[in-house]
Image (cartoon, rainbow, N blue to C red; front, side, top):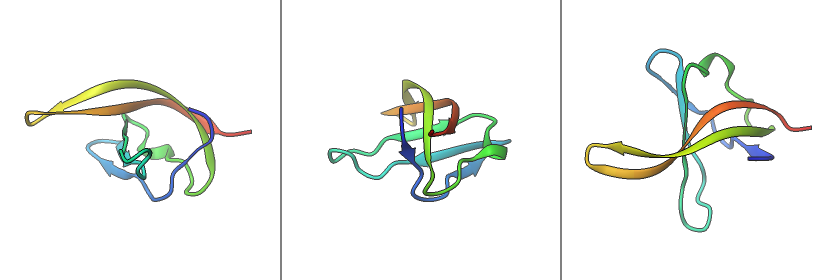
Length: 76
């Protein structure tokens, strides 16, 4: 994903992970999760390029789309 902007601070959870929910895009939100990256969360409002793996998050009987952040860098 190119030029993605975190509009609010991601939420840290567990041991060094973070999660984020995007603003609605075409009426839907996308949930992001990043394992062991809480020590390097992107700055708010700054454009980043993300490497993600799209998958389903199955939890408590629900199935929701989720993007696992594998890596990121600030956009050029």
